[in-house]
Image 1 (cartoon, chains in turn brown, blue):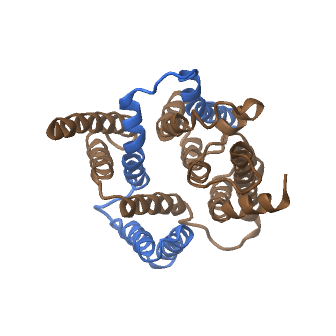
Image 2: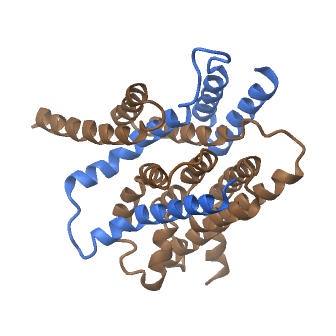
Image 3: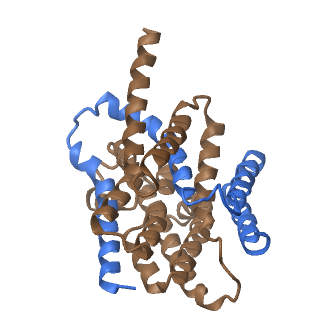
Length: 229
Length: 108
């Protein structure tokens, strides 16, 4: 691999590096505050490798959730991956031995890099995707593990650090809002979830929310088409 | 902390996460055309899901007793305004989180 091409790909991942270190450290510290040390954070970063699901898992761990509710909550928070996979079907079709890892490592951020960027000169698309996937994974593992170690060393109070997750989603929500004029899906997402929160209560509202969102989106698509027809 | 139960919870989380990532590749193996409704949902769901996740994060906020969700409201507003202003992901996340931590630790 040419050094120049490697550096170009590395430069593409810099925003993700900063974000993953920041959010990873936040995760490691949060885990530490709940009594789970660096080794736990390392293992979760290496083998689960999913930001929002890992944060969710912290509350499942401390709340002593059942395995079924764990499976369902993680499934519903990560259901969005299904759609990332659908867009990458073609690109990863002939990835050979790299394919399982490429699919495993397809996070929100890696997905956005490999779909938006073109590989640098002298590097194939697949090599680029693989390199970005590995680098991002390393940043996340280092961040999470570092947070678990720092949690012990830093005398500052970290009450409120869990807000990084809320801030992440508000940031993406705002970015999406600015990037499109079609605000219906975003409003349906907020509206249906608030409604289900009020109706079903905060323990089980996520699953009915997903169902309601999918239903309203499907219906509104059909009526939208009928209007234009 | 129950170590065995914790390990099981994490293992289930790992397996389910992997399933969500591998499933599309297992279902649509060979040249099969992706159904139009899946393509459509794939396009619009990310927007709806992000709204859902914001609400999910705020589900424990108490509006009817102190501090009335004020730190969360100010934190979210700071994130959104920072992002509209500079459109720098890290600045938005970092700024809003620091403000929130200051609010819950020193003000409320």
